[in-house]
Length: 302
Image (cartoon, rainbow, N blue to C red):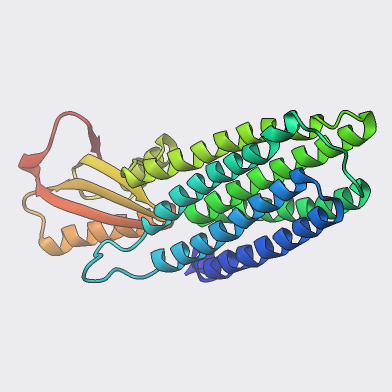
């Protein structure tokens, strides 16, 4: 069953923990806002509300996508994660717009902030928690190939960047007396968040379009087939697509016309086992063909 199976068993727990972390961080940031009355810190707390919603969506998505194939979804539910990731990308954009709406008016009406030291200390602790969690979430999500968890982690990265910008703005505003720096830096951070949201949406839409594997994974697949296809003559029409944590691999395997079905089936089983080991989450479909179906171009000779 291996390391990947262990990760799959824990993926729901990680998604649920992400919701709990988002709730805790949101509460801490709201305390920072109450201590200072800073509109920038209030905007930062609003962005954390979106984190909570995104965490819930990610939890529901990974729970649903992990269901086995059924009568109505015979290839599984893997793409559910992409819908979650698209929604999270939209939420990142919404968070950026919320920050802009709060910060823009302060460019013309900047005001001093009371209790800034306490606010900085409290908000800074929330930022450190978020930074540690998003680092773990992105690494874990990539390891188990979960678009929903990776998108959730990237969303939290945008929150960390937001918080860092807000904190920097408050420090500079207090040090220089130029209180306009607070909303100005918040607007700059909002632009960065908009870019992050677009990236999450773009990656998710590519997944929904049945994007092929990367060049290095394709090379690994080709080498694995060649290494374990002893007895066959040729492989052609190799195609791949990804859906969440699953990789679908399809190709035609040419064997001698006189080969028995049992022998040809044994070759297919050997190749399939090797591919699943080389590319975790693989689902392999092999079309057997006699030697007169061999192609001269775009084929692997085995």
